[in-house]
Every structure is written in structure tokens, then in C-alpha cells.
Image 1 (cartoon, rainbow, N blue to C red):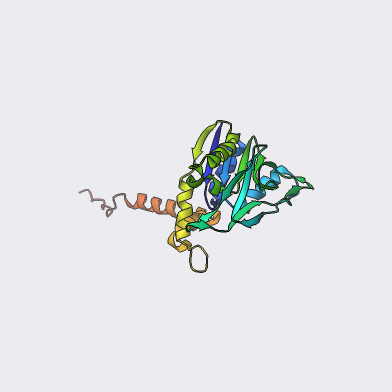
Image 2 (cartoon, one colour; image 1 turned 90 degrees about the horizontal axis):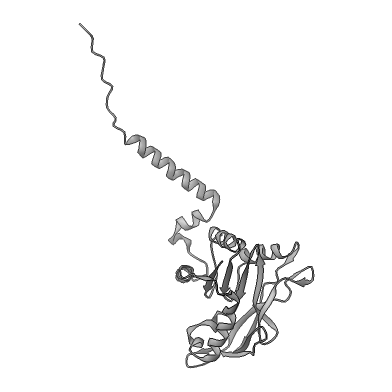
Length: 236
């Protein structure tokens, strides 16, 4: 009876972390994740659970300086993206309406962007559910300082049903670290942490663990006292 919360500019869990999160929700808990784009590694299992022949339509964008966000039947709230002492265009992300289960909606829409584009959805998974929100910008401290932003955040989080909450700050630190590792070509430089790469691939992980176990066994047996065999003395 708990809920996992994550807010960030991207959500990129490694495979073992994602498996733990899926098991956590399947057991009857909730996961609220707010980020502009969700990875296929998360969406495909959720879509497959929702229907036998899923089609994941990915995300779409609305480019504008402002957007109207609403939850349920509540009035819409206006949000304007400000940058460098002025307004600027922002890529407002939302879920594609093409995602379907044989022509039927694949998810429950909880909130909209500009009154027609789903930016807040619920996807059941096992005994629990995922609450996915594509506009973390609206939940930042900049907008929470004003009443409309605070009201919108309350409307969004009211779907958590007052459960015990687990705030994920660690994944945000990982997100920041990965942004620092970006090369000029835009790729992540995993040479900074080779162990992370090894543990993220099961065959390499098993080889790594086997190597560690063999090393420990070698040290254990070599730590025993080794001395020459004492020759048997002749009895006179």
C-alpha cells in the first residue's frame, strides 16, 4: 500500500532497476512518474499487459510558449515557459492518441494538455497501477510558488490515494550524472563506469560474479599455511 514518485527531465532506469519497479507495482502499489518522454523498456510491458496486440504510439509535441493543463473535470490552468527574463517556445509533450488495444483506448486519461491531448494517464499493471505524467515543468518550484500551479499539483497528486510515498532522489542524481557524461556526439560515455556496463548485461554480470568467487576461493586456500613436508625419521 505504497507509491513510488519520480520527477525529472528523463527516466532511464537500468534493466534490474526497472524489473524491481515493475514487481513493486504488480504487487499492488502505485508508481507516479513525471517526465517528458518515457522509454519503450517501460511502456512496452505496460502495453502488453493492457492488451494482447498492443500498439505504442510514442509521444507527440505541441510547440508554444504557453499551455493549458487540466486534471479530470477541473478547470484548466495556464502555464507559460519563461527563459532569460522573457517567454520562449517550449516542447510540451503528450501521449499519442494512436496507442490502442485493437482500436480501443490503451490507457485511462486523467489529464489533458490544451483540452485535447492526454498528458496524464493511468495504466493498470497487476494489482497496482502506473500514473504517467509528461509535464514535470508544471510541478517545479517556480510554478508551485503561485496558487494556480499549487492547485494543479494537488489535483495531479490526489490520484495517489494518500498512500505511503517513496520519493526517488537517487535516480535524479543518476540523471544528472549521465548528463555530465554526454560526449559532443550526444552519446553516453560508459567508460567512466565500466562496472555499471558489465552489471547491466546478465552474461557479463554472471562472468563478473564467477571471477570474484574464484578470486575469493583462491585467496582462501592460499591463505592456509604452506610448508615443506617433514620427512619421516628413521627409528634406530
